[in-house]
Image (tube, rainbow, N blue to C red):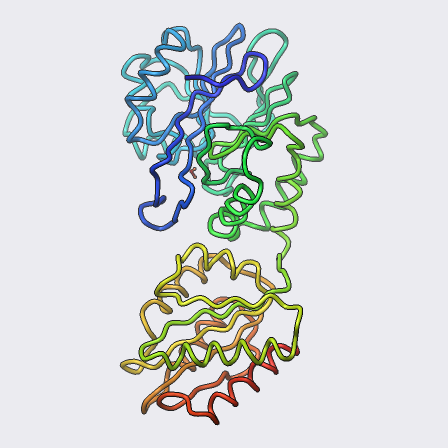
Length: 395
Ligand code: FEO
């Protein structure tokens, strides 16, 4: 069933309440997601993006109920990733000659995925296409936000920016619009999406937003490809992106660790106690990386000004949860953060030097050499951890 966005623009996408993992198993979606596709019905009928592959047939069947597919004049694919282009192959069975507007890189990506030589119409920033009733769609390349092919398009007169992934969030709702959903849930999903997907491209985010703002386009609605349509104060999410893209941090210290026989956990809790003694205002959070969702931890790291990483030594290394976590952290390119390490050991005690190398390789500023404890912490070791926490709390 369609949802009217404004005048002759309709949402024809799919809300996916069942989604728990996205990007394979890389991204947790605690509130599901949606794949937003839009149909513009002016003199020209225009379809913007499709849905994820598993819903291809359902999408096309529903679209047929909205419009005779042969009356669609052209398709815009803002981004070729499968969650948006996934129904293209099914759709093109019915309208194989229809023009597909996308970037040059979009042509390469779509061909790379579907191995078809469809009727591509490559576009660049500033290119326009007429949709009728005096309205035009203007294309804006969004290269590396977050794929080389990404773009947005802007519908004049209705003042709708179809931003694709940008400003989206993995959030299923029956109500579609930003003013109709729980604001805490919405913004928690927005910041998680930014931290886990867009943060590596923060410099480009800031540059692109400033470029779009310099065009002085009036933006009444931002119609993303995931989650809500921003119709109430739509630029609030743009302002958030400007904030998040500028080496964002809050007054938060996060301890992330894994533990074998509870020694490293006790160290974490004692360090946290010391931080609290030294600083009553800072937000302190502890996460066992083996038990807490990886992407939620990334979001907390994104918000933190200091992160402490803990692992006992095992086989002259660190626990695999922590090693895996650093693989993610390095890719996300966090900025403006300090860090230190801690961990128990029995004999070798190599975990701290490995954690410290991971910390510097991840672009964090190493505060000190960290603190280690042989075997399980005794009273003296606990006291040393509290004192270590006080040092951290005073930073
Ligand atoms: Fe929502 Fe980059 O795909």
